[in-house]
Amino acid sequence: MTEKTGRKNRIVKHIGTGRTPAEIEQLVDSARKFIDGKRIKSGVISFFDTRFERSKLKELLDSLSFVQVLDTIIYRFIYHFYKTIGFHKIKDDCFADLVVARIVEPASKRQTKDILTEKFGKKYPLNRIYLTLKNTIKSNYQEKIEEIAYRFIRKYVIQNITVLFFDVTTLYFEAFDEDDLRKNGFSKDNKFNQPQILVALAVTTFGMPLAMKMFEGDTFEGHTMVPCIEEAMSRFSPDDIVVVADAAMLSEDNLEKLEAKRLKYIVGARLGNIRSILFEKITSGLPKEDNSFQRLPLENDRILLVNYSLKRAAKDKHDREKQIQKAKEMLLAPQKVARRYKFITSKGKKQFKLNQKLIEKAEKLEGIKGYITNAIQLTDKEIIDKYTELWQVEKSFRMSKSDLKARPIFHTLRESIEAHLLIVFTALVTSRYIEYVTKQSIHTIIKILSRVKEIVVEDKVTKEQASKLTDLSDEARLLMGYTRFGSLKK
Image (cartoon, rainbow, N blue to C red; front, side, top):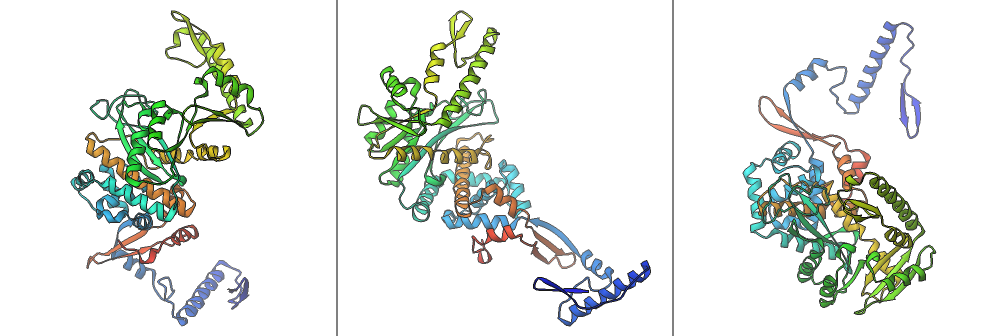
């Protein structure tokens, strides 16, 4: 028999040598008794000691009922960050539990009721959950949630918020009937025959959401930016903000309204639609060298900044050639041209041809990206860097749609829809902060912590209960280091 001392094994006792199966079995039995003796002398007792009969252990286990296996660790971990941000000040346990459940396993409210019971031991009647949704709107939780999030982010994440990223997406419903809010419109989910709503989101650097606003499903997305930004600015009044948005938000009306609020902005430019004079200046004057820049003055103290990238040029060329090939295939069967295809133009009734002018224009613009801004004090690199960070808001939308499954929506009442989106928003803020602190995705964190279970047993006679956590892996233990987990009680 050996014993590990440091990194080395040393022989403790030689039990003997066996040649036949019977002799080997006797030696194994002797070894077990020797180990048990050493354990007992050290004060360690095990139900697997040789002095206990296996029937005794079975008898003990038979006297117990294993009543539940809970994901307590995940719940406490997420609730720790929910509380750290300050959302517990809402003083609504059901709302908090709905947020945690939305992060761990997004589902309908009816399914969430069962998830809360089975995974976390939280029992709510369904009417209590729907009452919470109603109270969320009645007590104006959104204003409180956004205020808490803003103050926390400003204090602990980004002390000086100088950039506000904006984007909009569509969320569809598992229904086909419209109303004043849920309307058919252009769907980014390709659900054109199903009612939808538009959701605008304003986030800071690191993708931390600050404000959310809901619009009717047939609203033009370009009309959503200013109301959402105005609402956020009126509530938080941050200084020296630069609003960053993609080309879909570019309109003279939007820019004028932002300027009236004395806000700086950076928006993507639609270079295919600019005046021919500017187009020629860009395509002939911008060096086709990687990371080259050109600034062109515009009216109202604005500039158009263009940038050339070899990597972008290669991608644009590939996309153009692919679209031309697709257009040629469609021209072989003109009866199938049911909608507008890029690089195809009409030459008569049900007759089409390649749009050579558009092809030539696209070729000249390959590799070029444009930005319109009134933040002329920024350097070329600062303008592009700030715009590039727009992926943070896109990441937040991807998370809300995938990890948090904001879509499809099963509610029909406006207040229930608003409450559902607020739960998603609160879960998004909590998830993004967890990712910011741990530097791991929320999906990975849930996967690691879901392996740790709390086993609840009950004495069949006395009905007394006790519980025990399964062992934490090294990864789980590392995650728990981000919380004062031992003392955390809800």
